[in-house]
Image (cartoon, rainbow over all chains, first blue to last red; front, side, top):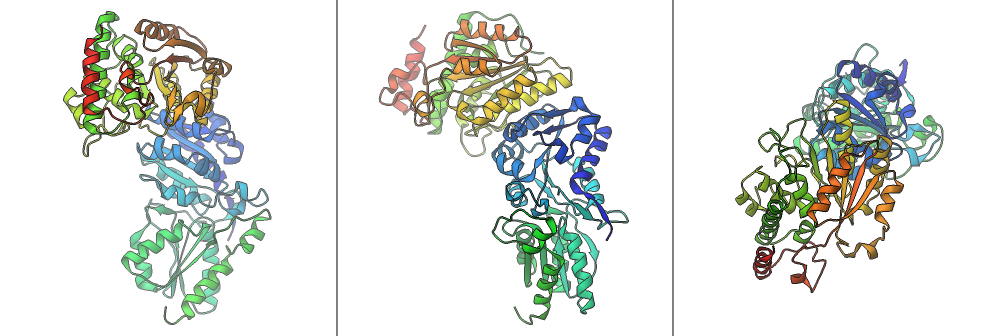
Length: 314
Length: 281
């Protein structure tokens, strides 16, 4: 797969473009705009950009107030800081009144690398899914991030959008269909379905290729919208392939795996495996070293799929 | 359309205050729960705003873009807000009897999605000022000249978010933002000076770059004068530290527990309180 930009870079550029189309959009920053890439917007629309300092709680409240007064606020910081530091504010000032505030957490997952676990958002998706009224989106690559920003601008309710630090492979080299709540089928197969989001979508495709070499036909779904998840796609995967592997760059607890498992359990239970971070913080290191050490590679997905396929009963 | 006529006579404001106090007491006693004493301390502040010619609003057009904003950040004083909104004509006064009952928009803490006139859903302390800053920034961007008022408790300002907001409001020079601290001296488990001593409160706000005034929060003339002075302040936000009494003016009926936090009056206490309020000049 060809390499594309990071999803944070794509987010920043998409937001700056959105700013041209929607004059009511304002952006609030907790002094990390050159990391989250809201600097593209800030440079273009300095009067619509507010850096409130390193104060995430206040940041969220200001975004809520701006939105109540008719603006459309997008706010951004590192995933762990905005979700963990300002969770009560997201809950009370945004989710409860169901405000059109878009929350973008960058530097999500362990692939940020050397900065280490204090900077890694590994629980952000779980927290976002626990906010009533929130839509939760985890784009796989640069083109899907562009589409996600556009799609989220089309809804007037709160949302959490997850972005990563490193450059990631292009899953959608030839354009990206994107409907909120509808998974994209990246590859079809009959033996097992791999459901992934974020940078694990590219890993899932790589795993499917390896599996094909061993005679296992894997379906791959990019479940970019974690909430509301695509129940129909999960039901079809369970019925038609009989086995599901879920892969995410997030703690196993409360993330995509939990969401898919609940949907499958309700509709059509099948044997499942989960690839994700296992109840642990990571550490400093190169992104690829960390992904390997903590079990978040194509090889881990492949192993999980083979386990399901070779297991006769469950 | 807005209520901006000349300030009414003090006697009229006092009558409003009495009516609102009775609404606070009877609604919480009827509900069997709630925070009457936290509501009673803020009555003169709210009366000056809503009936003293300070706040521009229109109960028939609650989302009027140019309305002034009043955010009750100390959301547990919801009975005060509801009694004031009923007094102002947002809904019939008999609806106050539905406080905290299932199906009623008069929830235990304010819910902006269910009741017109409520500007913010509050109840988790410390969040109103930040929202007020958002409204004030939007006013500037939209070239609207409305003003934003945020009422906080003196216990509430323990919250770090309040001071994050204080710093941001100074940075953005929000001269149309007015914070009021209802300094009734108590928070849930005891006197504010014992739980977390923030004195000197007024100087603290000044150190954060605000224009600060300290007043007797039960003296309507002082409250009105402070709001008028705040309106003339340029280049920085204003705070009014209003010294109040929790449960005012029926605190003498609650001598066993001067804080009386989060407890309604009994039926007997209610009747005594109403009679006492009626007996006042």
